[in-house]
Length: 84
Image (cartoon, rainbow, N blue to C red):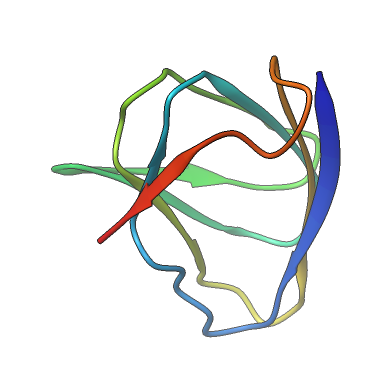
């Protein structure tokens, strides 16, 4: 499996992506939204986020501090990913 971390500055909205495998993310700090096709899920510190395979998603930092999260995939590297 692969493990990594991301830091999203206030106001950041990532490009929509989808991976061929599921993703699990743990929010260390900050607040924001996981934007899925047609839905936004609010998150904050200590939340875990599960993203099924082949689901378009983006991260939006809606707060005033950095969002820091750790993520993992059941894939030996960052998995094949499509971007919109």
